[in-house]
Image 1 (cartoon, each protein chain N blue to C red):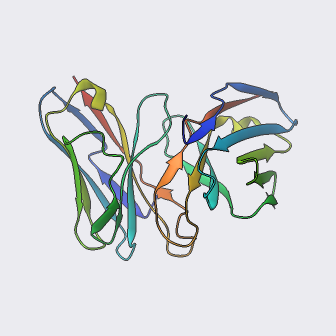
Image 2 (cartoon, chains in turn cyan, red; image 1 turned 135 degrees about the horizontal axis):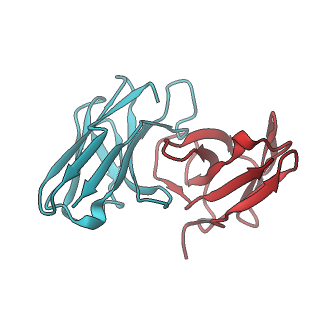
Length: 115
Length: 113
């Protein structure tokens, strides 16, 4: 979606390395979501932010995953000691201001490949 | 039991026919329900949302919700080849504030000319 930028668009890394994925929404969007989509699979909820707090981080797969957000702006998803099963597209989403609170617009995603 | 379940398909429908996509959910307290379309290699995009029992129509699309039976469906009338995509059902416990939104694994729809 035009309202959110994700970077990098593609990342290839070696197993065991740390990676940081970035989501940069248009400012003023209070809520922000992260999802993971493995090849051929559905969207797996990771975490959502309300402002810079995370009321629900129940979807983070392990303690290797962490996320933070600065105010109502940039969010970063960090994966430490990457494993091959972390290979997926990581999608950031937000509810546009003129829509319902839970109607999501998605970014283009960050495709992560762990070798 | 998955929180949101969909038949993975593929569902093959002839052009011009009605495509019917179904979704069931486990949380009886769910309040808002969504259908997203995802083309291969692209991000999901919203088609429709529905909050109340019954039908909601938007052009060729109709969403149907039955909270008692815990299912939501999407009908696509006059199916076109451009409707070929994966359709994702999503469910949320709330409708007025942000909270966890759970997606199904999607149904692949193929419209054959």
